Each structure stands twice: as structure tokens, then as C-alpha cells.
Length: 180
Image (cartoon, rainbow, N blue to C red):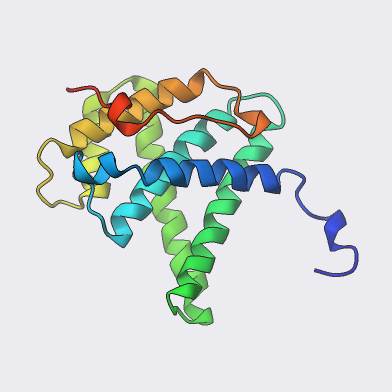
């Protein structure tokens, strides 16, 4: 950043990181792994962070300004974090951009599928998308149904909050879990 780089910074960047950090914290809820059965792997953690960040972004996009700008700031925070994480794992500089692009495309596809299902209130479609993406075809038992119920409860819970202040509260996964 040059001498005047601070003038070009996104005024919503800090809030985007705060909201993203809250999504990450919710994605780390042990209930999601121990009870729901999300694989505790790099892919499983990416999918849960992506799901929770998607829920935040989804609601910010529908709020008055600066909601949409904050949605972009959360998205940017997520992919900046992914970039740093890949570098810390030893991925070479030349490969980081390609891997981040693949992650972005994965999140984009998931967001479309999850958004359509949530908009329609279609638990079966959400379960199918979660099974396909989170469990990647592996035996998941009741996991997709449980995770879909949690995602739907979180979505409804976030809808009642004004996230533009940079504060949100996810439900603990155990409280959001509705037995299908």
C-alpha cells in the first residue's frame, strides 16, 4: 500500500472481517461435527465456513445500505482468509490463485443451490445440496437432514437481525437443531 493507500481502503473492510469471524466461530461449533456428522476435514470445515458466510452474505444483500457493501466485505474477508490459509499450508504462490478460484467457484455453486432451497423453503432440496457438497457422496445418515434444519433455523434467526452494525448472533447448533 502506498503512502495514501489508506484513502482507497474499503470503509467496510473491518466490519466484514468481524462478521466473517463470527461466521467462522459458528462453523466451528462442535455439535456440527460430533452430532451432525460433518466430516472434520479441511473440506468439511471449508463447507461449514462457506455455509455460515453464505447465510451472512445472503442477509446483508437484502438490507439497506451499507448492507450490500458489507456483503462484499464479508466475501472479501473469507477469500483473503483462504488465501492466507493456503500460503500457511505451504501452497506455492503460483498455485494459490488457482486454488482460491476453485474455492470461489465451489462457494458460488453452493450459494446458488442453498439460496434457491432456502427461498423456496424446500428442506429436501437443501438436504440434497448439503449431502452432495458436505458429504460428497459418502454415507451421511441423518446428517444432511440435521444440517438442513440447522441452516434453515440460522437463516430465519439471521433474518431478524440488522447485520449492518457489524454484530450478529448465530444460534448454537444444538439449539438450532430441529429433529426432522
